[in-house]
Amino acid sequence: MIEHLLSMDQLAASDITTILDTAESLFEVTHRPIKKLPTLRGRTVCNLFYEASTRTRISFELAAKRLSADVINFSADGKSAVAKGESFKDTAWTLEAMGVDAIIVRHGASGAPHQLARWVKASVINAGDGCHEHPTQALLDLFSIRRRFKDFEGLEVAIVGDVVNSRVARSNVKGLLAMGASVTLVGPPTLVPKSAAAWGAKIVHDLDEVIADVDICYLLRVQKERQSEQLFPSDREYAACWGLDSKRLHRMKPEALVMHPGPLNRGVEISAEASESERAIILDQVSNGLAVRMSLLYLMLGGRESGGGAEWS
Amino acid sequence: MGGGPSHDHAELAAPPGPAHVMESDEIRRALTRIAHEIVEHNKGAEDLCLVGIRTRGAPLAERLARSIASFEGVAVPSGALDVTLYRDDVALKRPRSVEQTTVSADVNGLAVVLVDDVLYTGRTIRAALDALLELGRPRVVRLAVLVDRGHREFPIRADHVGRNLPTSAQEVVSVHLMETDGEDAVMISKLGGGRA
Image 1 (cartoon, rainbow over the protein chains, first blue to last red):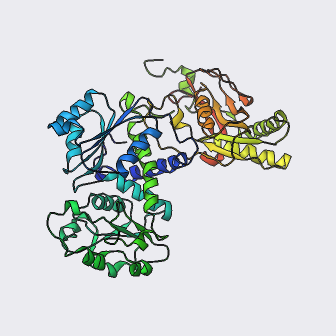
Image 2 (tube, helix red, strand yellow; image 1 turned 120 degrees about the vertical axis):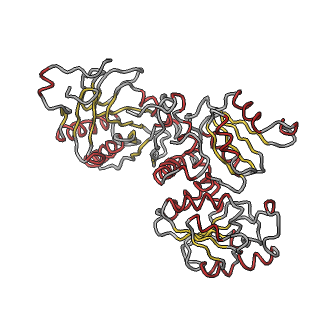
Image 3 (cartoon, chains in turn orange, yellow; image 1 turned 135 degrees about the horizontal axis):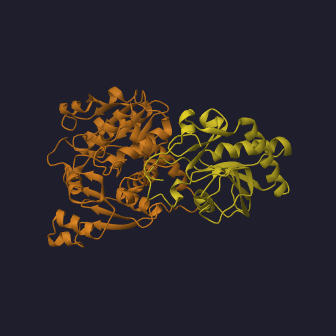
């Protein structure tokens, strides 16, 4: 397995399958009375978060703890040395000096995890960098889809909304295409630019054109914090044109699913009814994330003591 | 042994390859005997649970369960355990994909028989005991193996053995099963490929 996970580009379909198969086995562990494995005893994992996060940080923390690793949570807020002006590089070296084995990093700047991986010996896992990638979100989404549909071949996935600002979209398109699904990006031309065609997905600007044909409607969060200019007139206008409301929900195929990476803007990209319908697997995505991150931590950190590791007999 | 494989002339003349030590009929008879021993030792098939250690212990546990069902008329719960994440060498080896642990029965209070193909150092069984105890507290745990090849590194012994096979540490014992390899056979070969 790879040393760092920075982008979905690093993973071939066979690597993704290994991660998802192992996650399937670890999913069973997360439902036992004793949810703990001794696998990463003595290893230290650091959550290095320069941006706000609830589910990703907690999910990684719990995943590492379930594998018996020690966990350090570091948030670049008023309580850390970052507030005193410590640079990203000095923070990285400080963590290295304390002997951490893995750094889970979220940063507002695209490429920050790549830079970090050049500075430290620890494994670096990208937990979201700017508008670039969020590979573990894509892996847990693939896992959630495979648990329902078994196979990606022939699956029609629409990714709807703020595609241009979305690291979730970028990682998911790569993962879904690698596994053989077909992807359509849906949204206004300001949020789904023509240049996105280079990703290998189809582009459609009208949600009503595709909603009745898709197996999965994946809604992206409208990212108000990343929107420097007005890319659409108003929330109400957005909801009317690209939001999943009850009318569109009822036009979907009987077995089609609704997904969302969270947090939700109810009434904007998704209506309350759609988010609470039986089609929505938004909370499954969260619980599946735990098994997927456990799988990844084991596969990346499992054999590091001997520098790559010997084969099993 | 350093310096590469050392063959004498007789070995060089013979085509290299594993030597069969158990054929499919012998495996079948050994498993039938073990099935009877398990029931006899347990004084019946009540509160029994057979748990195979992945990979090849799992089909063996299923065969034993079917065998017991055929002569006792009782369905014995069986399951499979992947012990990879409990091994003491997990930090030394390259990670591999982990298979599912599926033990349908609640093991609390049951007599659990762990089943594996080859008993060697005992380290796999040590890991299996840890993995099993995460699922509950069995009343008693016993061990059944198709082949015991010796060279224990832990104070562990099997209660039911198909064949005791004296080996040297330079030999490799491999078990092939219909379910995983398309044939039933136990073979022994020299480390590095030659005939033992």
